[in-house]
Amino acid sequence: MNRTHGTNELSALTATEAKALLEQRKVSSVELVDALFARIEKHDRSVNAFTERFEQRARAEAQRADEARARGDSLGALHGLPVTVKESIEIEGSASTLGIPSRTSIRAAKDAPIVAETRRAGGIVLGRTNVPQLLLSFECRNPVFGQCANPRKLTHSPGGSSGGEAAALVYGGSMLGIGTDIGGSIRLPAHFSGCVGFKPTQDRLPNRGLVAGIPGQEAIRSQCGPMARSVDDIALFLRALDMDALSRADGRTPPMPFGALDSVQLRGVRVGLLEHDGILAPSRANIRAVRRAGDALERAGVEVVPFVLRGAPDAIKDYFAALSSDGANTARDIIGDAPVDVTLQSVFLAAKLPAKARLAAAKALEIAGQSLTAMVLRALGERSVAGFWKLVASVRARRFAIERELDEAGIDALLLPPFATAAVPHTFGAQFQQAASYTMLFNFLHWPAGVVPVTTVRADECDREATLDAVVRRAREVDRQSLGLPIGVQVATRAWKDELCLALLRVIEEDTRNDDGVPARVIDP
Image (cartoon, rainbow, N blue to C red):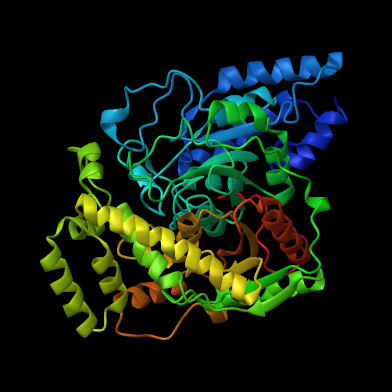
C-alpha cells in the first residue's frame, strides 16, 4: 500500500474518493479506520458525537477486508469503507437508549436490517452516535450521553436528531453515516453542520430495527437514510444495497433498486422555488442560498419558477397534532423520572393542558401578537379515538391537496430552505419548533428530500426585522449569532422520485462547489 497519506488527509476523504483509493490499492481499509479513530480520539472529547465505539471489531474487519482485496475477492460495493450509525438504530448487543437512563440495559438481539445489509455490502461500523432525548428535538442532548456540539462552533447545536452523525462527519470521525428522520432529523443536522443528508421516500429503505421515540405513533413515521460528505457518497451507499434482501427483511420496503444518477433526465424538469412556507420567514442567508441554488439548476437546463405552497401551513398544524395526539403521555411514561430536556418542556406542558385551557391560551396569545406560538398551541393536545381518526383523515386529505397544487402548476420538485435560520445555540430549540416546518413538510407528505451545503452566513445577514412575536424574536437572536455558520438548501420531489431528488442536489453541489463561503468538508473544532 502507498503509505504517504496523512491521518488528516484520509479522514477528509469522501466515501467515493476512499473507495477509489482502496480499489487502486493506494490506501488500505486499516489505514482509513485508524485515521478516523485518530480524529475521534483527538476531537470527540470536545464534540461528544459518539456514544459507543467498536474499535477492536472495526480494526479486525478492516484487516479482513484488506486481506480479501489482496486475494482479489470482493466483499461488496462498500468493501472496507468505514460507517457510523445513529444510536436509535439497533445493533446486536447494544442498547438504543434514546437518551433515557432506564433503557441502558435493553440490548438488541440482532442488527437492524439496514445495518446488517451495510455490513453485507462490506461496510465497517466504527460506532454509534449521539441523539436528543427521545429523538424529539432538533438539538442533540440527553441525560445519558450529554450534549453533542457543532464542530464548526462548539457553542451551537449540530442539529437533531441525527446530530452525532453530522458532527462526526464534519470533524473527520466518519465518512458515511446512517441516520433517521421524522421531522428533519437527517436534513437539519446536514444544514446546521455543513454536510449532506438524504431522507428517502417513506419505506424506500427498511425501518425495522429503528427504535421510535413515541412507539405506536404512525400518523407521521420516521425514515432511515444516509448522511455523507457528497451526493455521490449518498448514491454510492444506496446503490450498494440489495433491495430484494431488504424487502424480505421489511415487507413495507419494495424490492426497488436505486438507479444511477447519470441516467436522470433533467431538461424539462420544473422546480418550484419556495422561499417561505408561510410559517416562519427564513433568514437572509437562507434566501440567498436558495436563489443561488436556483441559478445552478437553471444552468443545467432545469426550469425554476417562484412558487407558493398554499397547503403548507395547514399540513404543519396537522403534523404537530399527530405527534401530540396522546397528550405526550407515551413520551412522559418512557422518560419516567429522568429530567426532561429544556427543548421538550414547553411542548409537553402544552400537550397536557385541557382543551379549553389550551384554546383560551392560544386566543390570548394571538391577541398579544404571538401567532406562531398560538398556532402550535392550537394543534397540540390529547384526542379521543374518534378525534384521532378525524385527524388522520385530515392528514390524508391534505397530502392529496398538496399534490394537486403541484399538478396544477406543473411542478416536479421543490427547492426551499431546510430551516428558518442557521444552526441554533445550545438550548435555543426551546419554543422554536416552528423553524423546522420546512423539513417537517416532507415527512408529512412521505416524499424524498435532501440537503446540501451551499454557503455560510455573511456579516450583512446576521439580523432580521423585529416584531412582537416571540418566535420571530428568537429567530433574530439566532441570526445575530450565525456569522460563518453553514447554510444548506433542500430539494424535495414526489414519492418514489428519489433519484431525481439526488440528481438535482448533485447539480447544486457541483455548481456551488467553488463559490466563496462554501463550508469546508472537514474541520478541526
